[in-house]
Length: 246
Image (cartoon, rainbow, N blue to C red; front, side, top):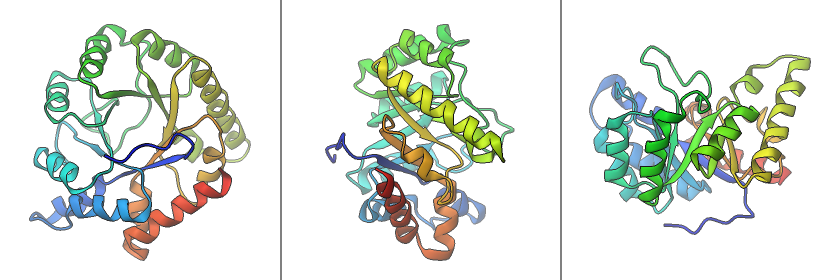
């Protein structure tokens, strides 16, 4: 596994939608494991995969193949269920990011209510941490959720940036300020802040410039751009935009 550089704003690339394209027709192509290798070559710092309850993109058999294909850290996005906990404990990824999940949603629509689900999350966080897996909570940039992460003992929060990504006009600055303030609050309380969802070439730099953020996780946009430019080029451009402001 590559040693993480704490001075570098890390780029985790979610390769779920390589599997989505594969699953649309069946068979083995395009291969998520090959995508992970290209991400590593292009300057990505980690691979994110979301094993959903309905297996709509990444499948169980993909997890080990992706891990074996690259030396990059694997970040497993997972719902707070007994099934996903057991899968995480079996595969032992570098990190597990607990996300909300509803079967009918197209993509993750908001942050996890860690404050309202403490009793459900506490044993899951504890077992993951005991297994040496870095635990992250995918939450809205809200002080209640940071307080909940502290009580749960989660070392990382990943801020859902969807509201920022979809904002228009004056709302953009408002949403950015929320993320800026909550990144500072998280760091002040010993929690490493990450961010992701809806980030593009056009909107990533104000987020990347937030000094406390340690990692961005970006997927759908990069896979979409890869259709036109190739995956290596799409990752390299995102990496360059992040580096320009850090």
